[in-house]
Length: 369
Image (cartoon, rainbow, N blue to C red; front, side, top):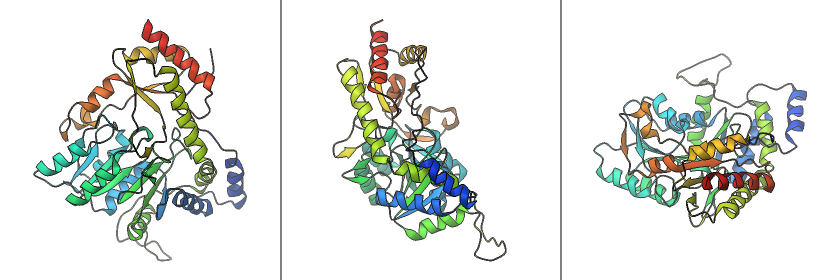
């Protein structure tokens, strides 16, 4: 049995251990510290974001965005239905109502057409939209941003999976009022756990910073006029992030190379369709995602597991989840069909061409069987 091939495993640059050593030598291993500052600066320098706030998760970043925007009980918040629940949970934290919008076929991301249709026809105006850039591929974000501006809806970009992806040369996460990135263990870069909130409005980011440190007022003693959260990032984890950011373009290039290998080896199979990439965009191809027209994806998953290779179904749409059975939605079946036919293939940046060849051969054998 070959060594386990994971869906998207951590991949250190080589600098992280040295930076962690500096943290330990300073004995400043608590939240905040010089490496938190350095990590925020590296994200700003890379993405072009004007302001950045390092946090303990991407979910915390979304939550703070909604809190700063004044989202509260009874408000409607639009969201991509084809996503991970981490994109949605913060809506519930604020006792607001998620409203799910389906995907389009050309991007698999939120449909601008359905978004505008909902906003034209809805009886209650939503306050915000959380749009997910799925599997590292940019949504049609310029169109979505224009629609949000026209209807006076705040835009929060869930770029948890898409650090390094661009649309018209501009980084995902920097089009909206807020953007968020995740550094969870399986992301293109990882700090083991962590997130980042970015935005152009400095006052809003500073308000989020205030909430992220228990809403403590600037007194020597502990003074509180409002409630907050313990959401800030550890100096140790930020040191890992600084090392990871040194190789972000290498990681994007390798992810895209892995996708091209799969496409080269499987692209001639008529029933396979790979996740598309919008014109004028560059996805980071965090995971190579595809659909099968006839073959049951579960059959392929089982075959890959037999050779110790991890794979995963596409996200089950949020409007299909029991938790959201009564939620408002505008869906046309696109995400449901993708879920019923789709699979994410192993895409770790530590993989070789031989790994991808072996996986592709197994998929071909399974389809023919």
